[in-house]
Length: 295
Image 1 (cartoon, rainbow, N blue to C red):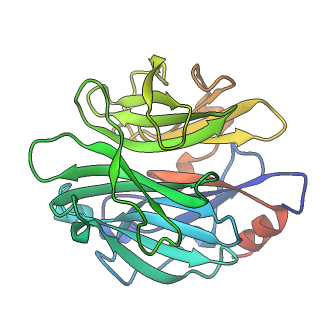
Image 2: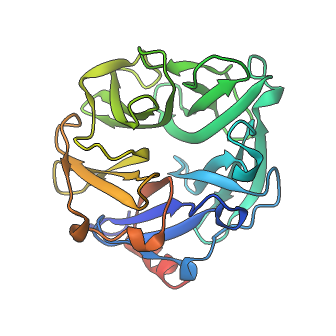
């Protein structure tokens, strides 16, 4: 990055109607206060698949440029109605192209997939490939779990989808978000039974992940999902934001040890004005921030 100061880009969708199921951007110069980009209008016009997307995740590629991967889904079709993710590329965060669909129903072991939700990706430095992971459910009675596979180009997979993590309870686990710190990988996910964010830890990016102690990441009874964690540069602190999908709005908390969190009071951050749903945060440069601000 060209500046010592870090800026932030929040990529999110805004609701359950088709006109809200698209990628939106907001930017911040401090990690707490975000303002909408492009007048709050969507950034991308989806042309393939369901023509609606949810849970957009934005990633800076290792060789330059950016990727957005998202759930290819229209809520009106029902919660068990999607088997694909949608992908876009950009060199500048402004112009998005090369839209494509990865259809998991055409992949061995996923032929009956009816939930392929909340895809995210990390670069595996050992394999020199990207690990995509997502919430997965096949038709039938099995729980929703976190699966993963590798890709070099976000066009096709180089490995077969495999189990990454499933809660010991046997209940659904969704919305995984992984971050590395101190040689350990922390996987934060929504436990669908407890309706809150929980933690699993591994020494390797691809697992095995074991439930942490304490397991819960939140000291609140508010129902949360769509969690995202990002660092505050210059401090040994991390911010987690999560979608208050029942009450509406967003919840924010912070940690320094990745296990114990304290709530950030609502008056100390600005997110709710965006009406955001599940999204992701990317660190960006001052130049990138200014280009987005000009939209």
